[in-house]
Amino acid sequence: MTITVLLVDDHPVVRSGLRAVLDGDALCVVGEAATGEEAVTLATTLTPDVVLCDLRLGAGMDGIRTTVALRALSPAPVVVILTTFERDAEILGAIEAGAAGYLLKDAAPEDISEGIRRAAAGETVLSPVLAGRVLRGMRNPLPRLTDREIEVLRQLAQGAANKEIARELFVTEATVKSHLAHIFTKLGVDSRSRAVHVARETGLI
Image 1 (tube, rainbow, N blue to C red):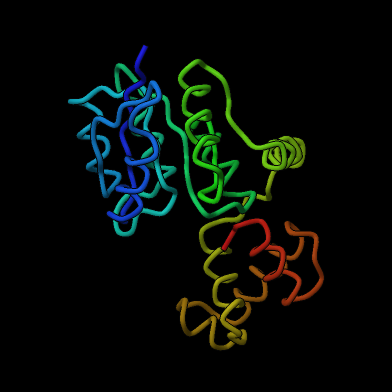
Image 2 (spheres, rainbow, N blue to C red):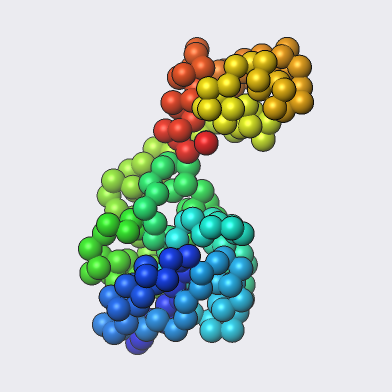
């Protein structure tokens, strides 16, 4: 049985390369999309078995939001993320959104084809290294920061002082200090540099 595939990537060269690799061998590329919105529209009309989707899609919906929208369709295609990004927050976010697999673009072509076939058959497709990280992440969930705390972290990462953060976010320095205290507690750190390091390592920023 032929498995139909919709490719979603904002780079035409990547889509062409994937089509060349995947067409044939029981797989058939039935369409290509450059954005998440286009992917949902095409999936509605083409009803592919599997959507192979990048995580970063430029302006508009990212791969995770696209996955949520695709999985809400009826019939819902299987979604496999194919990306260069492998931060824990992104992997867990994709799986929580309903993706059946998470593959990296440096994987061998035959591994990508095999991953699509396995996902279409109902399996969850992750490399052993990524699978281990997903399990660890589920056992030790990422801290939940508020939107404002994330904004403060982003300012910290740019080297901003408390006064600059306060001015940028239109709050008082006392409020910034309060946010920092909450951030340090949630991340289990005791310095601004450690907070930024942990946030980057876990994909919070």
